[in-house]
Length: 312
Ligand code: ASP
Image (cartoon, rainbow, N blue to C red; front, top):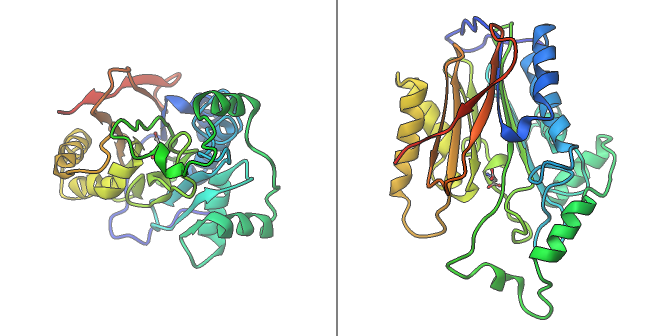
């Protein structure tokens, strides 16, 4: 893979960088080492996310993530190249340890962008991904404790209470490389004990992820339903396209969520970096838990923590 310059405005990424959220801790050091060796951003994104996907201690992504309401692991992931706007995603994929790699493979081998459910799993099998049970022992124990069997009750009854709370998380990785290329990726097990077949924003390009070399890279975490309703990542990018800095663009994106009326409303976090490596992380409807991201660029000896700023 090389970097393409098909777009009308070639960015000058001065320093390679990586922005991950706190779930990215298993992958950040390896990602920095790869960037220091001159690796391409797509490879760095994939590797940083793979390391998180196989880490059982991350309770919201890949192995270690939460199953759906039937105890079945269904994962979402996507990736996007900022030089060509090529993208790939999988939703509700089963029995695969590395959905980010399947998403990349969709992008690189199919004329499609998004595969979901049985088709995504079939594709993974056909192109050689090993099928494996990815319900970790700790996740099975959590499911048995926190999601009592429905018995004869319809599963839907788990979801109709106005107090239904989504508990979830995602790993995000937004990378600029020494070749002037931006790439982003996200991966998640989604809403803990979700309704089977539920697909969140991480699989939806424009909602949970958007990358464009001309402007920057944006990813969202937390309430994917709201990010989908607002086309949030693309909306933030549009503010950047129209000249807003990253902080202003993220804040406008978050304040725009005021237009959502009805339905489930939950916390949202937006991670954005422009093509010069300026970074901002904003949140809305915070439950008070401090949220931070990990950011590194080639002038720094190691990754720094960045706090998410509330926009209200
Ligand atoms: N946005 C993810 C989803 O809705 C989960 C999260 O990031 O908390 O599936």
